[in-house]
Length: 216
Image (cartoon, rainbow, N blue to C red):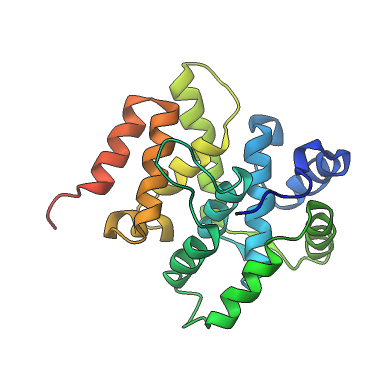
């Protein structure tokens, strides 16, 4: 995925956006999250708009994590194709009924918008009450802070990686079903990368159980 022209965390207006709109979305305290987690939510909200949704679900947040990380994850042998992954994950969402290739092609183009344009779009949607976080997304964000604190043995800010694993851990969510069912394979690769980067036993076990589920 091409690099963004401007990284949002370097923009003063992005920090102002987090301070103003994070509470309006009903999210936990923004101070409990690192810049990478802030950007994951930011891009996740944009993914919801790209797919013409008025809510930000866990599937959108997961794609936001990928975008916040630039779409390239060293250590899994290849870069993830964000457009292809979006196509596969979003097709598993019950809220999308047979999305067309034209839909995904348009989203791929709009995904390359600069951060300033995305900020203006999100601000307008939130101000008019046209974008909300689902209870599952809020729960995933809260779970991410628990994972971060458990890992370090003290309260600490959650990173994008903790959010990704919280989403994968949510067994009823779209992304967890993708991991559990073995499709898309890229989600499994991403989960392994996250677990390896955090290098924390419980998370490594989570990915292992996702890749080798017990017989049902």
